[in-house]
Image (cartoon, rainbow, N blue to C red; front, side, top):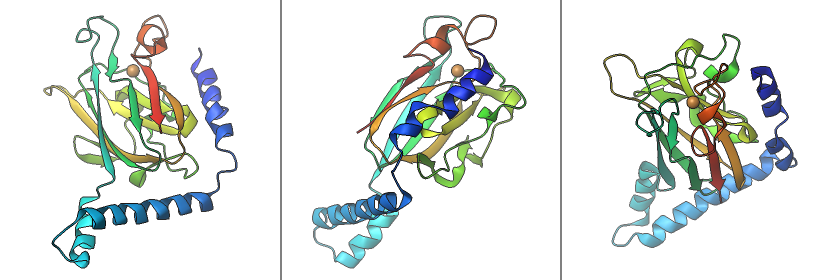
Length: 223
Ligand SMILES: [Cu+2]
């Protein structure tokens, strides 16, 4: 598929219809309820300290954060040269939870996206879809809102959530590069993700792994 065509697919993606009518007011309610539930949970589970102390500990520890990790293997590591792979390709987490996703990339090859491409940028600031906290990711611990298009190695792109996380290639002299970000998905559903950097096979780079669920495509199962 042509890049322009792929982009159109995203803009008119099925996710946009499924969340129609889900107002920001409703989401504010969800957020408030979640906070109350989390606080209640902690108070119940806490014995021997005053509730004032417990409340302080709650905000410091943020118990509702879910930690997830994906590794990007080179095709060689995955046993199929030319086929880089996200492991795992599927994640399952609860709607409304704060997910801290760490992506460790072992691929030192770039798959540049065109200069005009939006896929070098972090997306996820639309509260109707997914929210990437701070609108930024960290690359080896440093907060950034974009990766230069010519340094992109892979992306984690969820069209139905308007979420995009660019992942740079491993810099020379290093074994891996770590991208980390936190986000929330407010509505349950099964969301398809794919890489948008032409890291696959064929003349366009969009074949092979790029066309295969379990490699450069997968799902977020939001329960
Ligand atoms: Cu890729």
